[in-house]
Length: 450
View 1 (cartoon, rainbow, N blue to C red):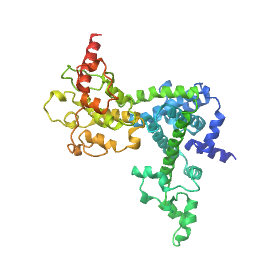
View 2: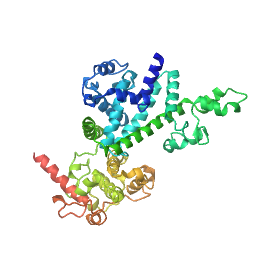
View 3: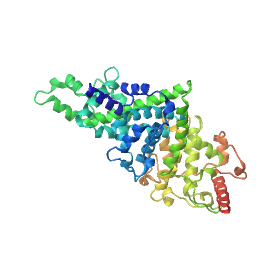
View 4: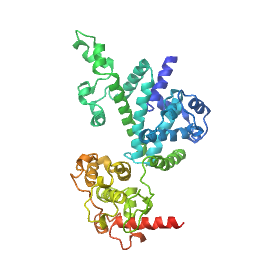
């Protein structure tokens, strides 16, 4: 009995959507306790092996703290070049599996309440869940890991099988090839019992068990397991979002959702900024970090998200050209030069770390998110920057297409009238880039005077 309890705990620790995980949620009770200090949590975090406690702020003291730290870990893991695993080692401590299961479900609900299912924030959480699963599995003893993987796979199976079509996305990422999988009648053979049942009589001169280890292998099982749980997490968030349109969410969830809306961009901006700093002389404004406060109304409306109908032109034609020229070469209309992105951003660092994130974030804010149903638009964005019809910018492809210049106000009024809401800064202006230059100049001037 004692051994079974340990395995149940580990299953929930790897798969918070398991039956055991749902039981933990039922037992948790009152969501109003999310901000209450949990002495057990503090004690376990503090005494986690290899945990670095150089600052008291590193210790999550409540379930809500743990939820925010979980998101902070995901952002730092992905963006911080100086990421220190020892500051988040407690996330690999099985002793806090109950708290971990609760905050997983709480975060799913908060994310579903606040963000679109294909948003940057949702992807960040889902992808980080897959990473966490693999890191936790790697720390478990081999025998225990094998039992847990098999138990989870048994629970995840649909009609007693796992169809190869259910992992099409992981195959598309090229992390796994279809040729590396053992498939029979459309079902992926992953577990030893299934392998022996289907193929034991095919091996007469060698051990079927050994052939199973050669043909399947633990790494494939673990990768598929993590991807399946990621997929289940996405489906779970989508169900919650659909339900939230009909049912009022708990105030504690709504409050956390609102906090995440501020917290996530604030944390990401530490590593991936497109915010302002330098100024210039109006009319010949110099390149410098973008200042969203100086964006003209059409650009602000695009960044906040465009509804279906105008999404493509707003993101691909309007925002891509505006953001790239405003950041790299704002004097394009005062120049007779023919210029390429690499002329002003030689190693493409600014384009990768500042311009594309702004464009992709705006695409995620669309309703529905632009890339969710039209992923090919990423290629069109790269094309409009002058790097040909490819999915990523590559200096070797530059010049295959032309760096698209910003749309005029006249064209915006004609093709995207819903975005054109002129204010005082638009007076006498015929292009949003000129509007940005003038407004940024005025804001910089006022700042100096203050």
